[in-house]
View 1 (spheres, one colour):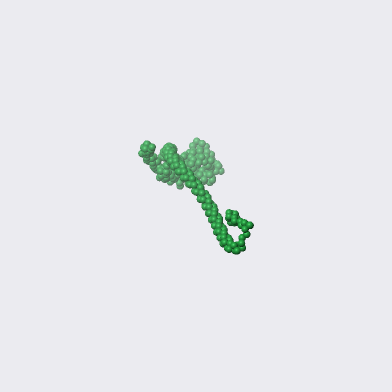
View 2 (tube, rainbow, N blue to C red):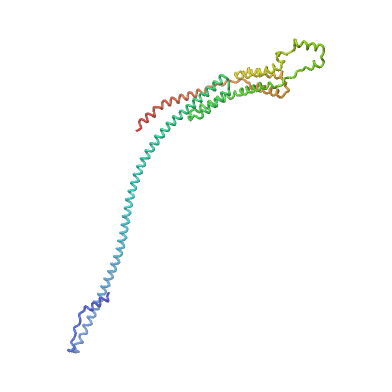
Length: 369
């Protein structure tokens, strides 16, 4: 660009005035013209140099401006991008705030619905609890009635028939029925039932003694009798023996050692022993231990006198009677009825509580919106 400017300046410079060829210049006049041409050339050179410097400065300034302009453009572009990003972030933040507001509204509505659902569940639980209480109360009432009936049956069976085994069985069934009751307030009644049942089971050996006596009565038919000594009259039969046998068919005189005449017959011996055993049974059922012990003693005497004591079956029967005589000791009668009375008292208390608590649920439901 500097070169082009110099050519342009050279073309713009005015042309020198031509000297006519016809008038030759005198020599003395040329010598003084050389000095001005040298000063103009220097001035022109200086001017050209200044122009070149100015042009170079201008070009440098333009390049610097262009560089600054490109930097500012890049900076403006980056700022524009940042502004766009910030605007996008602001939009996203506003949308996020809107979403958060919507979520808060949804959460508020869900919270209200949950509160409503919890209230409904509470009402349903109250209704189910009332229904369960009614069903459980009916179920428990039935079981308590059954328990009271079994306790009365056991008590009356023991009082009327002295049947400790039957009474103990009735008390066991009553304890099973009371165990199915869901109310823990009746656990004390179960303890009373267990105590009375234990007292009844102490009298169960009498029941086993009755069974043993029944077995002995059935075994009397097979027990062998004691052998009779008739060999003395058969070895040396004489006239007096024949006369005695002849008269014996009409009149029989013998020594019985205080025993009744019927004991000579085997059938009467078995029946008398069975009668003694039956009396012992009846005495045990009537809770008369003394009479039972006396009847067992008579049965022992009958076995020892009329039956073959060397036979194993007879010896076994005697051993059973001896063990029965040891177990037949006077016992204190069992006092029953405490468990039944406690059960009745508890049921009466529960009935009063239920009657007092019945109006309370109605008042609470009336105040509920």
